[in-house]
Amino acid sequence: METRFRCIPLIAGLALSAATPSVFAQSEDDVLGDIISPDIERREIREAQIDSENIEITAYLGGVMNVEDFGSNTLYGGALAYHINEDLFMEAGYGQTELGESSFERLSGSAPLLTDDQRQLSFYNLSLGWNLFPGETFIFDDWALNSSLYLIGGVGNTDFADEDHFTYNVGAGVRVLANDWLSVRLDVRDHIFEHEIFGEVQNTNNLSAQLGVAVFF
Amino acid sequence: MSRRNYGTVLKLALALLLASGVARAETIERPQHVPEDAEQVTVGAPYLNMHTGPGRGYPIFHVAEHGETIWLLKRRTDWVKVTTRRDKSGWIRVAELDEIYGIDGEQVAVPLPDFSDIEQQHFHLGFSYGDFDGADSMGVNLGYRFTANLSAELRATQAVGAYSDSQTYQLAVIHQPFPRWKFSPYFMLGTGLNITSPNATIVATEDREDTAMLTGFGIKTYLSRRFALRAEVANHYLLTSRENNQEIVEWKLGFDVYL
Image (cartoon, rainbow over all chains, first blue to last red):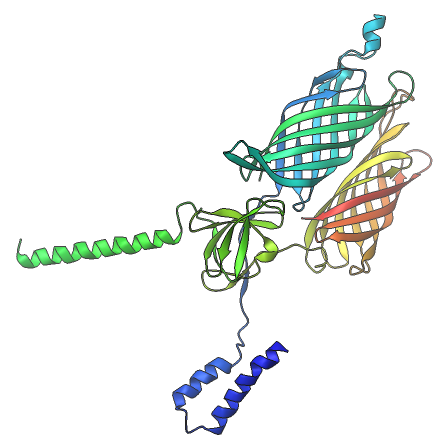
């Protein structure tokens, strides 16, 4: 509709110029021709040359993992994430820790259940994270840092005592960005798996908390 | 030195001064805070909102005006970091950057990848969770779309069961007969390797490594531009060195992301 209204003065102008050719000089005719002649050249569109920084690599600087019945021990590891959009990211994580003595071993004074080698625990997982609360973190008056609180969950494998254990993980974390490419992450996870070290199948919830430094590239 | 020579020197000095002035004007074109490889564009939209971070949750703190020169620095997901002549740096949504123009007046586009653009060749990466003959399985796959109907996929799965653990590595060809459907079915043919390790606590046997043939079908649906859900059932036919070949049925639920 609007285009039609816009066309009216144009058509009127055209009609006028056609009806009174003697009034307008030749040069003015060209000006009008320039205005109304369709732009037949296709507009060139070029893709912008910009780098994407969607990959985030995290190194756990400090972490602790509690394995049910085997105490809490230092956790080492890291994660590689791909940010799908502002809400979602997919992450592959890896970690390793050591199992302590179980209370049974300590109280009974009998031979240890596991060898030192079997006490080495390592896990990996594939997870999907959701940036639930993006926003800013204020450090007193001077700093406003971008941050987000995320929920994360996935599946993976935990290897200890010469056995693989299929593991579900759920957790939450906070990512605070120092600048565009550097962030600090605090992440708390529950690793849920079944094992039968004590004779019968037991479902265990194993919590880990890790503080990491992440770089986007 | 004659008076005429003085004149020449004066003229020369003036010319040099002018030249340096021009040179300085050119450097002002790209302010010092802007890196050399940043793309210079002019805003064609009435205005562009600049956020403090790449997300809707980060506040708008500045507005780039129509006709203003800005530089594109980098991209994260669907956001582009830009900087202005006055060193204001912020993030603009890619969808809003549909009217920007380059130095020669050409329109500059920032591409938004989209699964619905089925003619476009692209990589996709996915995670999956499933049931591998009674064992829980997790998988990762990397695919490449050649045509609207045809893709190839590298797949790796780890399954952990009560009696044995398995790892599978496969190369599969996927055919999507109706790529435009909201729920698009697909068929799969592949080959690969299955490594089965029986649990040591139950039976003490060695790991087996078998060549496997893979057939399967599934359904794929796009939840957003770059995120697709998929469900599939696959039949692994293991060519074993024992008397009988073995068949394993695997059910999977997962997601794919357009890279």
